[in-house]
Length: 329
View 1: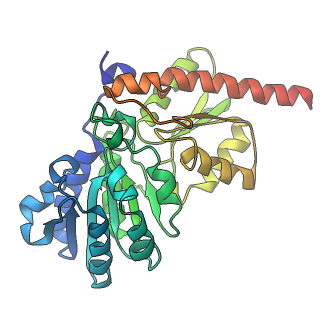
View 2: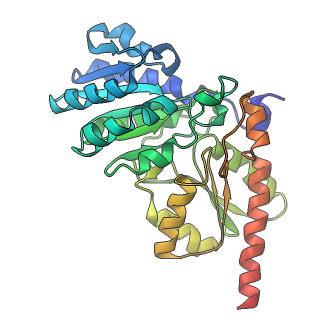
C-alpha cells in the first residue's frame, strides 16, 4: 500500500513544507522586511529556498530552537517580519517558554512554521512526531494557529501570515498531501473555514491530511444515500464559529478529524465553539490520548485510525447517536 492508496479519486500533490519554501522565496522578492531563521533543518523545512536567494536575510542558528525564538522576538521589535522554522516538535516544545515570553506576551509579529507535523512524518522516529503542537500553540494568547490541507492552501496561508499583524503558527507536513485545491485559493483568510461539500445528514470538520480523507468518505457515504457536509477548517484558532454553528444547526451531527491528540486540537476547538452556540452529538477521529509508533506514513495513518474508513465509521456512529437522542425526546 502507498500513501496515495488512502485517497482514491484525489491526485497527490507536493508536501505543504514544499509550498512553505516556495511562498517564502516569492514573498522575499517583494518584501525586504522579511528575515528567515532556521534551526539547522533548512533542507527539511524548505526554508533553504529563501536562504539560497537572499543569503543576507537568512540565518541558520544551529540546533537552538529556544534561542531562535528569542532572536525572532527581537527582530520583530526592530520592525522586521521574521519567519522561523524547525520541526514542529522542536520549535514548539523546546521554544515554548520563549514563545510565551518573547512572542505571545508582547504580541510580536513572528511567524512560526512547524514542519513534520503529525504521524505522517513517517519513519523518522517517534521523537520527530509532533502530535501535541496544536494544543500548545492554541494555549498562547493571540496566536493564530493554522493547519493547511494541501500545497495550494499552504501557499495562501504563508502569504496570509505575512499580511497578518501578530504571531502565527503554521503546521506543515513532510509527506505529499492529496490535492484539495487546483490552484491557490484567492479567498483564503484565517478564521474562515472552507465548505468543500454540501450535505444535510452530518458534517465532517477536518484539517491537514484528514481533509482528503473526509472527501473520500463523503463519496463513499453518498453511495449509500448519506449526504455529508465537508468543511476544511484550516484555522484552529480563531476558529470559524459561524461555520461550526451552521454545521451543527443544519445537520445535527458533527465529526472532527485531525492528525493530533484528542486534547487541545481541532476537535476541542469545534466542541468549544459548538458548546457556546448549538450543542449536538459529536465524534472524534484523531490519535486519542496516546503517542504513536514510528513507521511508514500510510501504515501509521491506518493503524491509528486516521483514514476515510475511520471517518465513515464515525459518521455512522454520530448519526445513530443523534437519532437515538431524537427518538428518546
